[in-house]
Length: 405
Image (cartoon, rainbow, N blue to C red; front, side, top):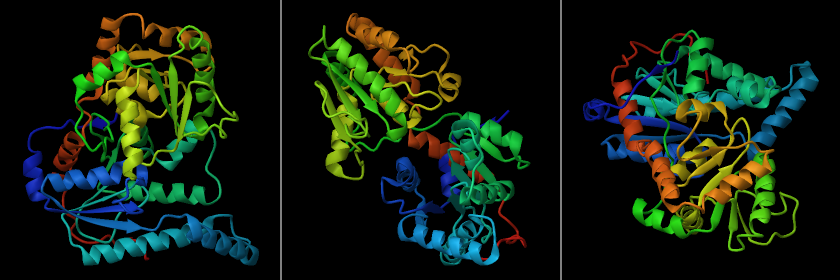
């Protein structure tokens, strides 16, 4: 069993004690595109709670840095016959640890928040690891294989950081439960809910959104390249439905027509990747959410959880695959949509067609979708996080086994 903590009164008291927070991220937390908007929203909400936030970026292993690490690892293996990826990971985390150590000396704080693979062994204040899932969990449950090369050493590093951390918080209940069975660290938590990463410039007017949806003829798909099979299924189904509903249109976000291997498709708009950090693209994304008749992504195992619950927050009924993280959280049957396999075109066609037949039923589905996640706000999440962090003891000293940068 994973320990679950619910938001409760007392967050203001926690925030009063925790006046300064160091937030470490791979990349700039001021950039909305970093880790699904989470660092940006976390920092903004901490500031709303009266905390002073030091945003500390450590390098991301991409671009020229990645090429340099790969080259160094390749040369080292030729000279010393070492395992692939060992030096890559060692050099990268030396850079990370150097950043963390210097920041700890420069920015004294009451609390550190870092990703699972970072941690902070260099300061006396407690550290909360905040993440979605571990490398090991990702490879085992989603990819069905063991990590290889430098990813193997990334996973080993993450295991070490999690074991010695003061507190570990996973966004997902299943992952938190799995971690509690895998690690000896007893301080692994789930905060009772996930969180909607809403960065719209205006507050949601649910009634206005529902009026738009009641007249809408647009289906929305959001997904990257590994969701392409579900996008192709939806393209087939929409083509069938357009024969009797010619006004029906499909918006595909995250994929281009070239990535799906088609030249053009009547009634389909390919938006490609919409970067929320770019104002015009952010406006487009939320216009699509507010105006969509339904959100559809039938990818099995993992169908874009974050985009799904954000669509629900905006009152979209959802048609998705019944993957475990979702069904355990919202139920085997959902009043705000339906489950459908990515191989069952007939069922998907029937489900989408049914959205237009009963206006009262459709309105209930929209309201149930919003109701299911209306408390998944960053205000509630940070309140719970601060309440948990308030109870963490301050370290008496920096651990002797803290790694050297």
